[in-house]
Image (cartoon, rainbow, N blue to C red; front, side):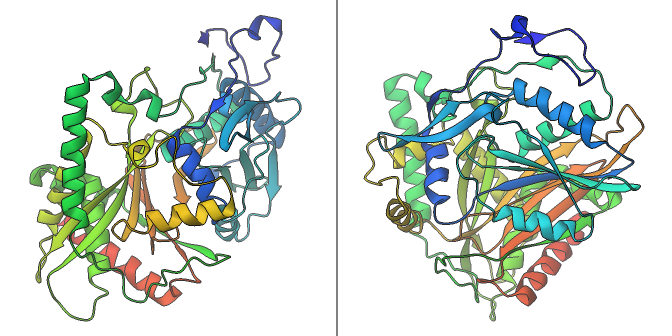
Length: 453
């Protein structure tokens, strides 16, 4: 529900708003719950951040955080374990306010990487906000999320709304309903039983064929689950000219930018093998399901509405970049068009034998380890350039995520003001810095290749 009255970020929430502020009080969906289980073994946080030219005051940011917390039910929720299942339970924002923390501008990227491995207790709010710097001409605003309440796209949109409000833009409050989980909005549930069964069968037959392929793991990567992690991220930018050239080339070849990013990533992994040979390599892509879910979800709805889709690709001795980019797009499209790209609830049923304990998380991890080994790619696409109402300039928008410990690298990409901002995230206890830098260099080289058409 939307209130069309204007405000300047300093809105008083009175009785007339109490009926439209919905509360989140439900069991977590299977994907959300799995993230909570695995979070017991290793943090699955993600962070969205923006580089800023100009000055935003802490007071204005906290006013904006107050308003946005009222808009979003998941920012007013805590996690509670009930009957061996996690639940979102509502809290009052006055008791658990979302407030900004000021931190030093120096080494802000290192501080963000540390936040990726700093767990949430389960108490509200399941998000943290940081302002690195803020008094000088340059600063960085960052918002860290527990992954059970958000994905990269909605997280970036929430961050930008906070900055817009803090920058003086008059915006109506957008009260969001407390949506069900992605699994409860799954389109396959609205299909006829026969059609749904056939779609599921076709999906799992294809998955079975992929699972029968012997998929190679990255040489030098430590597959063991360690009790701690040392998360590091390597950032790089792709210029507006090169980004535009990549997009043009993708359209000419009948694929997408995600396909090109995936091809660059898979071939960078392939470059790590000592010998040239035919091999099968896998890729995990985070796919936004908003376009195929019911209930009229919008980009302003905070929540975990993505699915992890695994594709397996036959890499030739002399691999062809565009053939691989096309194959990535085709396989992802096929999974989504099969009727359901979010069948995790079919694997981990409501009666699954994994208790909500560390041991249960270890059991769940062992099951997920049976899937094809792969690196992870998540791309939230294009974000329009933004200048705030007070003249503050948003220079860049990016995000980073800690992937499951089975993945050697997680690549995140955002295109802002026609420039692509990429982060390669990895665990220095499992992959050496030299190898991570070499893989990053190889990804950049393949993207330069793509830009040439």
